[in-house]
Image 1: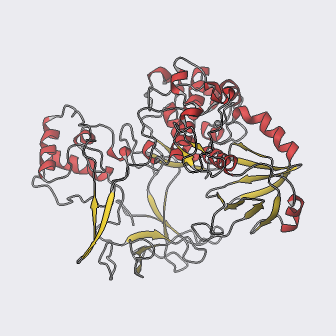
Image 2 (image 1 turned 90 degrees about the horizontal axis):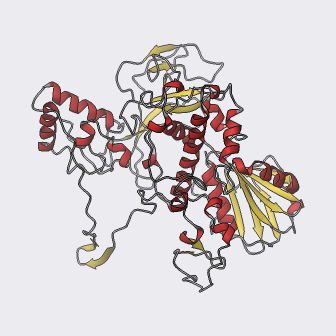
Image 3 (image 1 turned 180 degrees about the vertical axis):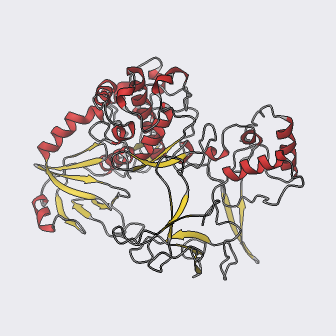
Length: 552
């Protein structure tokens, strides 16, 4: 789902790259419920401005406007050379202006009246977490009015908190230390204020990561993680709320009884995060507009913050208004402990020789990783770590996707530092000693490693590489079945194919069953079971628990 920060960035792209005042020369929609005849009213109209509200984007053309909702995987492209997107799908809406062309993909488009849209944005803009006019006090009153609802439903209600999606919901509730099933009427005013603050803070973190290209998954603590990023306790995945949305939580860090929760003692992601527009030290935590990268209005080149003119066309930088530079009217927050930039790329030099083309990688050795202070270990853990060090299970305790001594002693899971490298290899042979300490170390390591096809995964005939496990998503009788395919990327993979469910039982229809996971809260949460793969209403009622252990 394209959440509020993604929609806000799409609005910023349109404002910076599409000039106002252009007339609509051609507009057409493909795959929309609205026919192309309905869009004829936009021909000749001038494009005036763009507004965003939560997950909605409004483009105004005189008395009429277009409401765009990006859904799960929606996107837009401006002046793109190719008409189709990366997946090869055609745009659902294409707008040809005097100088620019805007295409929307996988989105929902509706025709609205400009007056109605502007009134709606003006009435609820102060609730939008990505808006510079966000009002924390009004948001708290809106949350408090939902007394009988669960927190997981209130946060996803776009009338209460526009722009919040499933990622923000799960991480904000984790930061608040509250179970998603807690009712709002159980919370005190201080706890409601803290929930709003944590939701706002993670939304800004989301926005900043998406804008700078920094990976957002490094900041996840529970969302789609097998273990909590704070206490390494196993997370719980379930469906909660009125709509049964996927919810991830840590039962060790999130309390179901708000009366036992002390907000002042909760750990924070970053103690330097301030409350935007208020509180002590807020001015130092807010990034002003003149400190951000800026896009040239003529050639759309993104320039450095210190540049006073465009590096390409020498167009002067537009003046920053005092109102826009005020800390209380900007949603950008500076996080000094996080590097909001793309990973540095080592310069490469290619040259040709008689034996082929060689590449020289120039690495910067001046930036060395900071050593991690080891925590005190018990005698059993010390012995386990010495055995692991002899077998090369970790090096220097640097977060590179391998297990470090800190994680074995109860520190933060290395998975929180980043996704493991694909080139990483680990020794899975049994330890020389069968003591309890060695077994404990290996069990913790196995829990922290990401799931892989396992030793039973077949190898493709052409490359002799372990195959990757995939699921059939195409509609048909095989939808939901699992199979093995070549693990190489598209274009280089071979045609290897093998069903992975041949050992699954047959249902009463004589077809292979599907393996599913219990998502309901209770003692069976997380267990796998076999069930009929037919569509709902046509199932035969077959049910069987899967064998204990990791399933295919």
